[in-house]
Picture 1 (spheres, helix red, strand yellow):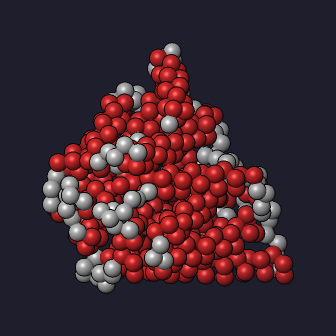
Picture 2 (cartoon, one colour):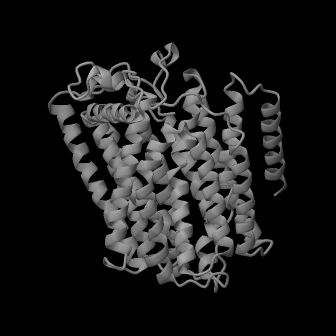
Picture 3 (tube, one colour):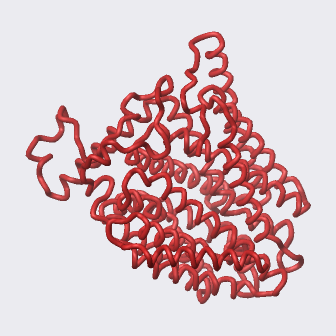
Length: 496
């Protein structure tokens, strides 16, 4: 326990030293440090692995049926409703106000968790947590408006890594406090409340961007010559839309547009600006999804992310069903920490595997989706909580490995602007699928299945995904062998 504490103090001291010795103006270091500190404290929530035991325990006295059917689905519905307007608002107000809104939503969420009682109060918790997840887009998009393109990849790595470190550290801390110090779940939520409040304070110190990717874009030599978010192919895969590789400034409208006249395009009126951006979004998305390569990887991303979010939302209820927290020791924190760390190791390791992803990528999607299906079916059929934990470890690690490959495959041909658009639409589609799944499987107006049967459905869902991509991979390999060869482009190199 001493070593992580020393490491944490060293990291914090280094971050603060870097922060205060750097001029806030004209520097990528200052906003990066502030954003990383915000990300760290907003994810440093030790109460998260023990949320369901807290809600079903003496503090809130909620039943499993109330949690499954009336409370948790609110997060899915609110996330879906809020995602698109928040996505548009985020770029229009230039990120910082939305990051502050996320901090406020965090605080309201944990105030309600600490002091709210009853089903309606917990439904409000899920609504505001839906606001938290919907506004997450601002955290990852902010940095592209305040740093120069040559720092994009480095800074993106910092921002994503710090959230992984924070989530793992919070899970470990939670398990140690519960198992060794007998700390109640209520005080885990108090710690989370303090951490998200600190995150909110850091959000106030973020510099306000002068531009954004769409509504306030400022064409510059840097942007025009900037590399893609992760990498750019030397030669696009067969079937790719040729424009997807090109950097393109979002507010620019093709001169042959017949829907908008010159006066409208040059008008500074907000409604014309919004119309201009929406038309450009539509054209960019149409062009990018005309690529079969990008379309199928996006399809897998949307389908799997919908299932993954559903598992994360309900897995603690399954654990509580297999081993009730009131009658046995639980190790949710340790399992979450190991699963996150294992997924990170798997995602890191795939960067050293040399594979022609154009030829074998969808075979990998099919095989690992099948493994995930098996892990979920194990969680359904087993009565042993340790086997259930093991199934979750396999599932989360496998998903994180595949999502690393998928993100690389989708982003490799896209500019930063199109990267945001494609992943925004993929996330929205994933939420639509997840909402349909929730209404059919969980909601009282649907099948209203018990939690153990739900995981049978989710396992079958991932088995169907595996079947789709295994059939697709057979077609690709057959075409490569007997028809036109699949190009061995730089997508076969290692994803970062």
